[in-house]
Length: 121
Image (cartoon, rainbow, N blue to C red; front, side, top):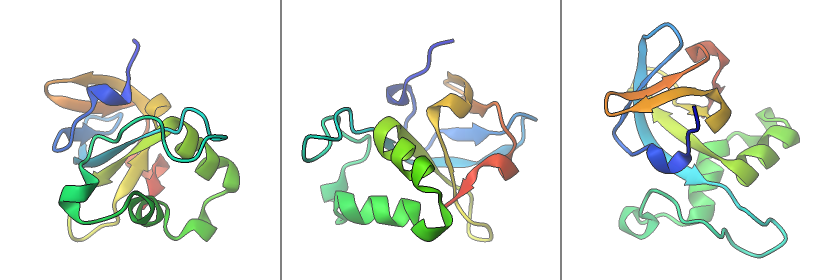
């Protein structure tokens, strides 16, 4: 099945491969189609002006602490985009990439991986 980040919306429930709810989509960050050009060509699913944050602040927040993530993963996230999951107050938020999505429906996003396989935000 062909999925796009544009199919995923803030507030959607996110389920792991076992069907357990992980959390809800906090925001969707689209990828930078041409990293040689300054700025991101695609728009994000979140209105950053409304949140009072800059794009750079949000990327830094999503990737922090960046020293934990391999450069290849950070580059992949910048290039292809990612989704941040709000997992609640008592656990760290998670991030998933489009290739970890099994399906997207009105019920939510179902992943093909377990919660433990997701990157901690």
